[in-house]
Length: 209
Image 1: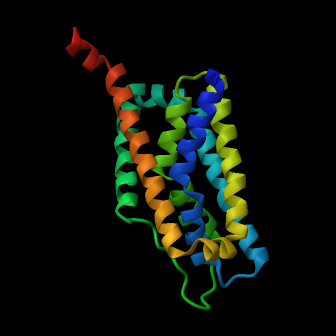
Image 2: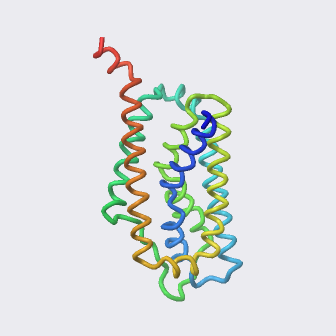
């Protein structure tokens, strides 16, 4: 496997675990179950386009943000890794978002922006993951990161649209299993980010001398 393919798979698994399309589909269904299909499609499109724009901006402007706030790449990896580990730990213990609209309660399409786009789809963990994979400034890495997130947005869109049938097939037990599996993957990715950040930090390098 060449370096580009390995990077693509790493980014794909990282985003898939942190976005968890199946678990997020349960949230989407809970918010929009009483709405007509046209409204569900509109909400899904707005949520995913907004989250894609946010992640793309942070992926493209990662180095500029670093310089603006005087942030180093190891610091981002350590902080982002700790954040991802906490999210993964909570998912492993069944801590997931439960947002449901009351029966017959009209849902404002603005739920596409909050809470769906932010913080569910493009939350701190997703942003940290995007910046970590594109922080090298290499256009190949940036393009791969953005394209991979776009691919997952398309997958998530179809999960949202066919969400009621999907959740019915998987069931509560299956949803819990998937959520905890994704939590384990996220925790491992977070640990790996911390290890890489520590290994490449100037402070640790100075201690090793």
